[in-house]
Amino acid sequence: MARTRESGDPQLVTNGVTRSTWRRLVRASNWHRYYQAALVGADLLAVVLATVITVNFTASPSAGFDTNNQQHFFYLTVWLLLPLAWLLALWGTGSYDRRYFGMGNEEFKRVIRASMFMLALVSFAALTFKADVSRVAVAVILLAAAVLVTTFRYGARYGLHRMRANGRGVQRVLLIGSYPEALEVYRTVRRASAAGLVPVGIYVTEGASSVRNLDTPVPVFAGTDVVTCAEQLEADTLAVCGSASADASDLRRLAWQLEGTGRDLVVAPQLTDIAGPRVHIRPVEGLPLLHVEEPKISGIGWLIKNVLDISSSVLGLVLLSPLFLGVAIAIKMDSPGPVFFRQNRVGRDGETFSCWKFRTMYIDAEERQAALMMHNETDGLLFKMKDDPRITNVGKWLRRTSIDEFPQLINVVRGEMSLVGPRPLPAENGDFLGDVRRRLLVRPGITGLWQVSGRSDLSWDDAVRLDLYYVDNWSLTTDLQILFRTVAVVLRRKGAY
Image 1: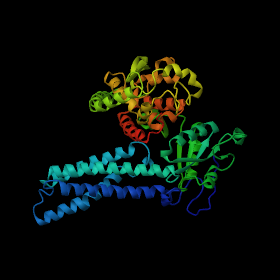
Image 2: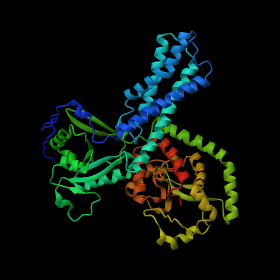
Image 3: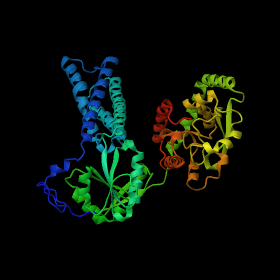
Image 4: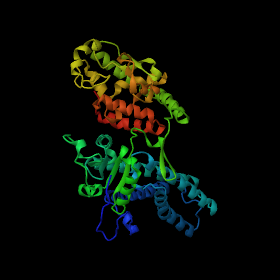
C-alpha cells in the first residue's frame, strides 16, 4: 500500500517512531480550532443568558443566601462558578470533540450528559453544604442553560453547514483502494456534504492500468509514496477503502507514517448505509471486530412512535379542520370533481389501503397519464412532471405548500400510515421484487427521509436507498429529526411538484 517515507524533520525519525509527543497535537487542518472557540463562546453566552433569566424572572432566586456575604457568594456562584462548571462539564463529556461536528446526534447526546452531570453536581453541592436554595431557581437555571446550549449548537451547526457548502471548514480526503471501492466512497461522501469530507484524489492500489482511459472525478495516483501524494494534494485525511484495509501490516505501517504529520487516517469498510448505533467495535487480541446488529423495529421507542402518531394526528385533524374547510371550498370552486382523491397504495407487509389526499388534478388525470409518459421526469415506479397539465390552479398551490398531503392524517389515525416512514407507492406498480420490498417492513409515512433530502428532485435509486436506510437504521430520534427537517423543506418548497 505504501512505502516507508524518509523525513528530514528533526522532530521525526523513520520506522514510525515520533520523538516529540507535542507533534501529535499538530493537525494538518485547523478549521476545527476556530469552530471549537466559537462553541465555547456560544456555550458561555447560553449559560449567562440562563442566569439572566433566572435572576430576573424567578421569585426569590437567592433564597437561602440571607447575609451580605452569602449574597456575594450567590452572585459569584451563578455568574462565574456555574458558567465555568458548565464549560468544564461540556469539555469533560467530549462535547468539543471535532469528530462529532456537523453530523449525527453524538454531539447533542454529550450535551445531555453534561446537563445531567450539572444537575447531579448542583444537587450534591446543595446537599453537602445543607443550602436551603430555591428549587425553582435551580430548576430554571439548569433547564434554561441546557435548552439554550442545545439551541445555540444547532445554530452553530447550521452555520458550519453553510460554510461547508462554500468549501470552508472541510477535510481534504485522499481515498486509497481499488478504483471501484474508492469511487463508491467518493459518491457516498459527496452526497453527505454536511460531513465536510471533500475527496481531492484517489490512490489506486492495483496500479495505474486499472484506470487507464477512464474519466475520473478527481486525480488518480498509483505507484508513488501515498504520504508524499497526500502532501502534494494538501490532503489532511487519508481514507482506506474496502479491501485495501484487509492487509493489516500495510495499514499499520501507513498509520506509523502518518504519526506527527497531523493527518487523520480513517477506514471505510465495505459496509454502507448502516448507521452508527448498529455498529460496534469489539477488540479481541488487537483485532478490531466490527459487530453489526439487526435493525430494531420494536421496543419502547416503537411504542412511543405509535402513541405519538395517533395522538398528534387526532390533534392535527382538529386544529386543521378550518383549513380543510377552506381548501375544500377552493377545490370545488376551481374545477368540478370530488374534494378528496383516494388511491390504492401498498402499506406495511404488502397490505393495500386507500391513501387520502386533496384532489390536485382534473378528474380525467389518470386517463391522460398514458399520453404524457414520454414526458416523465423521473425513473422507477413513479411518474413526476414539473409542468404537469393535469394539475389544477389550486392544485399547484396545494402541492407547493404540501397541504395536499394533510388528509393522510386520517390514514395515520386508522393505523395504515405513520407520520414518518417511506412514502407509500401505488398498488398497481408491481409486486415490489428485490430490495424495494424491504420498504414494506414499516408503515409508510406522510414524510420521510427522501422527502427531506430532495423530494421529487431525487432519482428513483436515491429514493429507494434513503428509504432502505430509514428502515435499517430506524430510531425515535431519527423520526423527530425528519419531522423538524420537514418544516424547513416545506417552507423552501424545494422539489414540490
